Image (tube, rainbow, N blue to C red; front, top):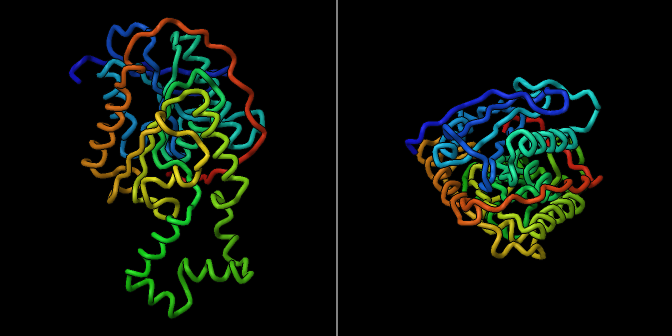
Length: 312
């Protein structure tokens, strides 16, 4: 970790409208080692929450990797797109431009995408369509609820005195679900900005993305935290949500109990960086491989998924 590293500000994309920072070891020579690309989380600037992405990029560079962290269109220093694409399509188009730029300007042969929350979803969706993506680091990606999720969720709330008080006066999430079941849609306006992860179409979309990713041979490191209990609350939820996806041998799972969604604690962040470093140092990533034909990325699917425009 003592190797000298250098940073370079870059503009990328067809209009040179995407702004990023390349961090790499001094004297870096392109090789078969994958280049890491760190994606925005929601509308958070490329430095990440509490500069987490700056620290992560420096750690990876000190270990020998080249790292690009850049702002999607309309975030941070990057300009808005002019083509009227939906938020999801725009993000995928931006990532494609970044990967193409790395291939042509930095001789990158393989890519590892790293993302938190919406960044994880963007990494998955893009990675499932581009064989140049060799690995994904997914931090709290979107996962549909399962039977065990609901059992754990209600058990946790039943142990909290406040939940019983809310039940008695007719408020809280449990009552909201009861009202929905009875046909009351008044709460849907408040939740209209959220992805409906229980929707069969969304579940099928995510399942398809994971299956395509596994079929490409992509290695995945997924880290879930207990700081996102409205979405997931146990380590194996991704396996139970997508039982038909052949994850075996390609997915490593970690669950950080007591950790918030953005890894605020120094101890949690140190643990996260250790997990990523151990995973990224597997033989298939660190060995220098023969140059491979990049090929054209597969065309994106027409299915859409709306992302929340929040900062996580």
